[in-house]
Length: 128
Figure 1 (tube, rainbow, N blue to C red):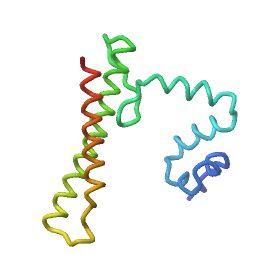
Figure 2: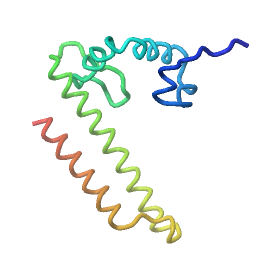
Figure 3: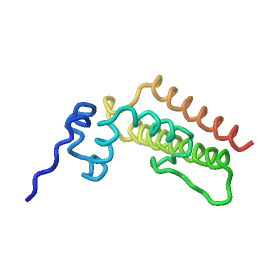
């Protein structure tokens, strides 16, 4: 069994979580962290809004960069909305079937509903 290579910069950044990363991903991140001058341009290049909800870059043929960024933004917004709806569904199930200590407070439920409404509003603005 071969020993896993050490990634000192990555370990300093995220601690033991670095051990959970695939070796090839950890190597690429370590290379970026090894030369900070190369890090900023790489990060800025990824901040153009074209990363999808799964974190992968969205490249759609026949669309302009703005259209791709809008499509990626809608995907991220819908992913966030999906998570909020799942939490609200779990809260409703806990309210009906769970005990007092398993229920979310009304303030938390209101906050989740407001967050969901804002995500829907943002998605509608992107489509218009």
